[in-house]
Image (cartoon, rainbow, N blue to C red; front, side):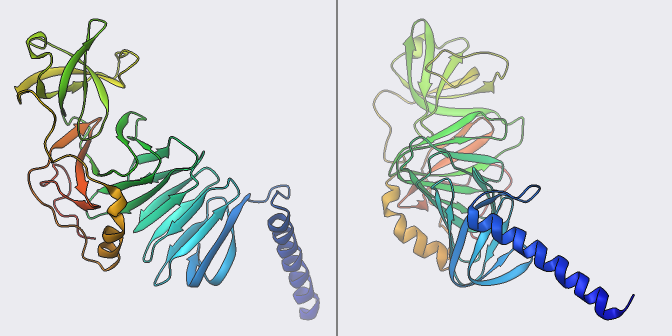
Length: 314
């Protein structure tokens, strides 16, 4: 076969492949056997789309990886969700979720769309919710709910935090056998002992001796989550308590999470590479094998979290 004939055949095949891809992208649907189109990506500069360098904009396919450099990028998804990927960041995108692998992202119009980061799932409770998710050094994930509220689940699907609008937490998965640690006011509902943790806003049912005399008191409990037991309706898990520390009566102090609405300053700090400065005195919770500390103005205001990492510099 002549070389010209082979070249013509290859050119025709490539043209057909490109036509099929373009037809899929233009119609927003599928050509049989093609990868689904899930949206578009736009940047004021260049970015990496899988293994290619792209300038300006591109069609976003299921499972595609976006990696930014000096220019941030914006993903408009077919589901209606919008994701902003920060500079020096990397994420893999799917129709109903994204996996953040490096840097930071912001989720807007988040109905039926979720973030995944370092084994954690961050999902909105309302369609108009927006959040900023940042990967910090070690194994930490910072979650700031800008509008609406978000639920954070661990790798086993257990609720480990409720993040209300205007609040932020820094979270770090722990070893599987890490004991749970919660702080809050003990109450009794229908014969069951319940405690809502002040840091994560997660309610647990407690079992164990000595709880009755602590009713109405602010306590710190340490124990083991029982994954085989079913908690009462108001709780997400059962903790078999091994130790109780009385903290007196009254509400929590000023170490709780402060407004994430001040997260603009945090964004500036993170973008400039300064990271977060850890303070002291904040309560650290461990729920479902995930350590959590409140943040102040988007900057971590907790003491050192236990576990893999000891620094939050990016």
